[in-house]
Length: 453
Image (cartoon, rainbow, N blue to C red; front, side):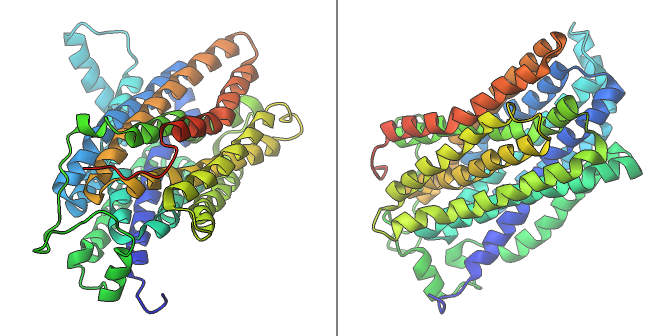
């Protein structure tokens, strides 16, 4: 195995950095929320509406992004996605101007009473969600192209750990940039980084059958456990052009989509609301939240990479890819239950909820590495992005539900002088979501079954 080559891991590194940039872009707002809340006088519901605008846009666009990438191809599809989301990230720096222009248009339509700043950030977030929707369908499709099934969860875990690096880098840099150069600078910097990544993508990526840097032995290894044909007798790639309604007829699609709907919102909640939690419960703002959030997201690195490795333990014991993955996911689903203790023991120190939520977030990343790989286990490679897009849409809708519910509960209990009750309810939902999702997925697809196309 050591002689077959390792170029596939270069491609994995590209996916890792793209995902890092993706999460840097989306997390800037949550870190600046306390500052922007004071500057513009936002309520928790205002912020929930802004985050929900991103999640709703992301959810709807995921459905089309997967299809778009399957049709256009991985190289061009991924490039378009990062161009759009990088431009949208920069647009946040001009949210007030965007809001003023949008408010004028809304006024002509008879829609008034909305805050200019809220409108501007909602428009910027909608465009960001539209662009960022392409990252995971393209990355999962690339993983299916460049890795055999037994390595896909590990590769997914490694590139998905970029989300953790992004989440670590953001609290270490964004508050400092906001204090030093103004909050607008943070959006500019993360937007520019995306364009730098494009240079490396065009240099190093090509589909495996045309990749000159890939050895024949490594290409053979990549295709060693492919059960569905990928090329015809002439060497041309076989396209499985399955319409959406047909994909929705498979239980495998519904298992993936429901699993994403029930668990993606947990990660969104942690990503978008933890800075607010530290402010509301412990009066921490600005650079004070840098260390706790950096520690928390550093913990998620363990879950992302370890979770990708975990099913290989069962696969090496003789389980097929799907059954080994589901066995690993059941064990992973138990770890978020510790989040139930975050509020009861939160009086000891803010580090108690930070570390317990860190365990839950780490488990999410382990879960995420595996749930994505269930798609490439059972679907043809040329449909992977489309199915990933369907599940991503479901996950985005789950994120909208979590954000809106959080905003409602926090405003309600804050008015009653007991905002910690709102957080207790939300943390309880986060804790049990995975075990419920696992049982639903297992009931829909009890055993490994290839999709017949």
